[in-house]
Image (cartoon, rainbow, N blue to C red; front, side, top):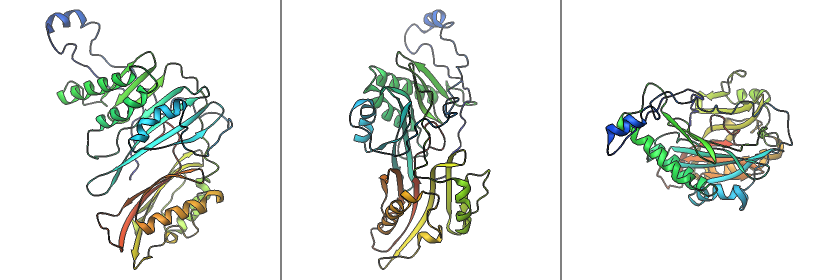
Length: 363
């Protein structure tokens, strides 16, 4: 579950064949100057410039279920029906952020995640969305999985948007496989309609920016569930983690193949991911959470630490995963137990607490 660093704003060329069918020569003569193969515009940065450069604006970091009605319910309905976990993860005076995620295990049990993020304005309009590419091979082309997530979601609120998404990504993939897309730069394409501007790349997936985007202050709250990285480092080191903060936001524990990684806003922890093993023998847990965290999960606030720890331990004892909300906090547990159904087992767990800020990496 290594964090993947991706370029945020590298330009790339994409040139589709002007003509795919009849009268190729004539049409090229007519349309060539209009639809020529030149460098496309710079893709939008992740995150958009300045959206988190503001003082707190009624920040609320309590996660909750996505409302059944309105735009939030509409854009997430197809995802939830397909087995995705979705939640409203934070809000402020200007907007609210939704986060959806699905984990697909491969043949050896490693879970590959795909995430969809949405930002809605105070009038319940979609302002921005991101349908990420898949973080590794999981039984299907990444572009097909992006289109499968994005098309029905956008079609639920914008007429014609879903069909256009499928067509653009399908044509892009066909050109990529046909060799008409340059490989010395990041392959990507962009288009627009009456609803939004769209930018798709093989690295980042599909980013959608609504034409009437009215959210200038994006929500960033995390204080109710997380502490600061500077206050957590000492306890992590006490558990055997090699931590060098600042500047590093990643710690490793060599003796157990463990890791601890965070996303931050300043010193404030926004989300944390860590890996930990478990060993169940004769119905008892032999590898305790306290081996990695001798003082407990002190990177969490006291209000949420107990309930989240209890859920993690329950999953470790049973060897099962979890995706849900505990004490107003997003909790994702991916279990790699292998194919055994035995009462005694060893397993490795990748655990995420909290959702990163919209449009930031890792997702």
